[in-house]
Length: 530
Image (tube, rainbow, N blue to C red; front, side, top):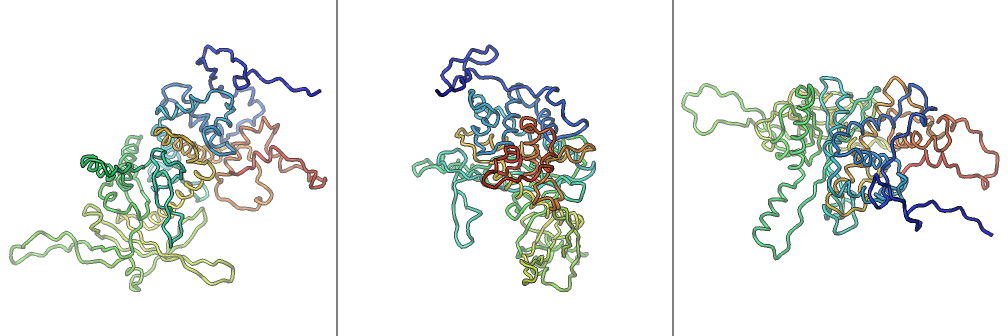
């Protein structure tokens, strides 16, 4: 005879659920309250944790939500997006929450009915970044766009895009959703830095009308397509960021230093820069630059024509690099916390017709860096970098350091897509397609901020020990995969029966044969990498 444990009385097993008068008639239960103080009685006293700092950031987002249950639901989904071990779909997040046998419609309505305040949540992250900066330090922000690949042909906001990962000899196209992101740099104690997303917004293009469309529809499409260009959206977002920064206490005295690539170093962005904003971006090696016009001498006769606005033609960036009469200057910058010397050339007080007359520029040329694939192999060189800056008085160290930090936004994109699965949610509503990735990116930003607050405070958390193969690895900052594993240990450690996290390192070596090894659940969960 086979005995089977009785099923729990849940609606999915054919039992009629008892009506809960506090919720709707479909058996939907509210999200559980946070664990009580008795559940945390065995925690280490006077110790900070990533989980507590993460929950504190979400508590600051509570006034932006209309109801407390909406804030609790968003916090639960945001935490699940960091803890999820499988595909980061909404059902995967619900399974991580333990709600796989409950009604799921409320979670979908959170996004489809525009109940997730994206701008207000990212404003909490922005204020958290400003709290980590010195009072008079500028806010260094990197701006870039990326693609979230999609497979459906009818997903709102998705279209055919050029594949940036395609080979150089072939142009490939992928179905994807285009997004725009701003990440702010937070300095660390050991000279390193960390880019934290402070804004995330979709940048779709309008659908092209059919061949039978009227002239008015075609004209409306062309106007909408011009407004949907990435430089236009970027200029709007920069102005919005400057306005939000001025609204903060003592924010008007804080400068805004933008670092962009060549796609945003154009007249659309540079001519619309708000005040107290400096832009550093890449420029073409054959760009035509001009010196300032010379002061006019006392004319013997009345001048004819308009006064000269541009001076003599200046050397192009490539000509400046090849000019031996201009010496190279060594500038030491920090790359991932390690000092690196770079050779640069500078030419100040220039004008560029693309940027207009309102910006006096300086040109900076960075010499190619040499590297070796092996110890005794041939020395190879990377390509030179040509930078333009809208502040002619900005010092070289700050300028080059700001541009070097821009690469960390590419690391943000990689971690968002690989570790958090941004873009994997299978939603079809127009609002949900935009809100679900925003929730995941906001949770990722809060995780980075919570990690900084937990490890830079006076009380250090009980850290999950690294694996044996990574013990000798010197890391200048706490990596995101390790922060996710640390968060999993803080959330699931008590349920797994771990009194402290240092017990992993003191385990004895098993003496049994390899085929008799038993799977270890705590190690499999707490050291997993998506």
